[in-house]
Image (cartoon, rainbow, N blue to C red; front, side, top):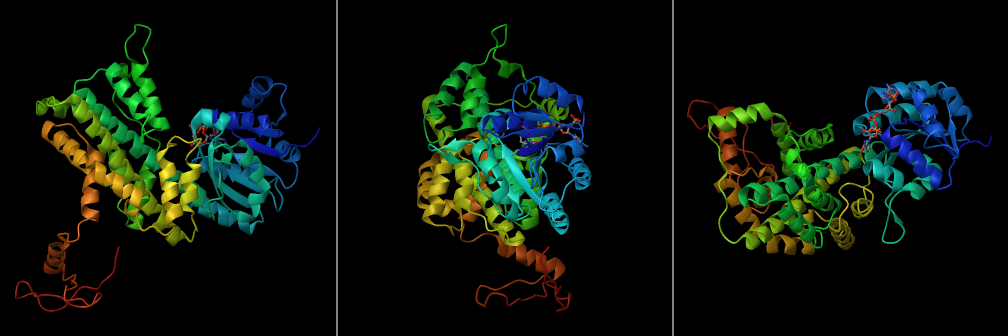
Amino acid sequence: MEKADIGLIGLAVMGENLVMNMESKGFTVAVYNRSIEKVENFVNGRGKGKNIIGCTSVEELAAALKRPRKIMLMIRAGEAVDHMIGQLLTVLEEGDVIIDGGNSYFKDTIRRSGALAEKGIHYIGTGVSGGEEGALKGPCLMPGGDAKAWETVKPVFMAISAKVDGNIPCCEWIGGDGAGHFVKMVHNGIEYGDMQLICEAYQLMRDGLGMTPDEMYEVFADWNETELKSYLIEITRDILKFRDQEGKPVVDQILDTAGQKGTGKWTSEIALEEGVPLTLISEAVSARCVAARREERIEASSAYAKKIEKLTGDRGIFIEDIKKALYAAKIISYAQGYSLMKEAAEHYGWKLDYGNIALIWRGGCIIRSAFLGKIKDAYDRNPDLANLILDPYFKKAIETSLKSWRKVVAAGAANGIPLPAMSAALFWFDSYTCEKLPANLLQAQRDYFGAHCYERIDCPRGETFHTNWTGHSGSTAAGSYNV
Ligand code: NAP
């Protein structure tokens, strides 16, 4: 039998669909799964009559592949990946390539990349976005790792990825070791932010304006024809219209407890580690944690007799205000996410192409939107842009939305409607654009209780001073370092 072009391990929802996608593009795929009955079910079911070779061991898989072998893992992230790599090392040879397409933590990918390079095995950690449908019809792919292996896997990746603007693949080499998984992690963090902002807009309409799902459907349908056009706005529109067998809106029957798998949390943790304010995404992660504590919320709601007041005034005008607030806050979310990528790229020595990252996110993935084209344009105009909000297009968009954004956040605060992401974005904007923050007082406090010193407005940067605030604390200053 002819040998396979690529192998794939992990026949769950993502793996199966990626195999079908690869096969449909003319590649022969050898497949293996830990529970081997799934191999049989797949090759005799969906995979029947296709160029798919079922294997019941890693030895069989290795023997079924052309050299250098390319094996993609689509299995649960974490220890399972280390375990599977261990098994593969017993059958692979120098020059072979292992690709991890799961949602692995980028620091694990850095570690695995280094360890495998020592053994002459090329390792690629790739972000795969787009869920089940994306995997089948064209995902957004964010590969990173050992650049020597890229030319080997490129034809498969380019062929299976989503395409935008005619035929531009939503796949691009991201950078060394963990860069691909890092960028996928930030993508997921941004996805958390986008979803939370849409949910806040929904709650403003549902609880503040008392609108029905049908009425909100119309609003989201309208918004999807504007600069907000995106996959998440589109599915929100469709969700609001969806009825159960009794004709009730399904959205109203769903319990308000959010789940999460941890990629948003990782993004926030890394932002803290890198010292980058990522307030919107962090609030989106916390919002899911608050939502998950339903029983506590119900008790607190009753303890405070909490009631959301209805908003007064012109409904049409307020809906337009919400739209502008959503758009402005979304800009901040991406501005923060891009700042994190910039900082991490410096720290880890990756050369990220920010315009291209926006371009590949334009198709196949969950955050795909017209908006990303504007980010690509911004980085084309200035690849060294210090912050997205300084780009002329986004500056104008924020200026146009600012009044509405403030109005919406104020209305939420006045009426008890929680807007953690929209308000965090606004307060970040107000801090970032504030020439003089109150941190002079903060430095004085630090110096008062810990002799941490401060810099003066009338002296060169880096020269530090300590004041004996109490008259009895002496003149010894603490050592200076950042944690
Ligand atoms: P999943 O539920 O995350 O994982 C199930 C697969 O992992 C099965 O094939 C399972 O094999 C295998 N597995 C689990 N533990 C294993 C171990 N110790 N050794 C070997 N294999 C093991 O499946 P999924 O949703 O298709 O996702 C696959 C990967 O893609 C994950 O990393 C996920 O985070 C990532 N991802 C998922 C999505 C999505 O929308 N679902 C989108 C992008 C990326 P058995 O059949 O033997 O249990």
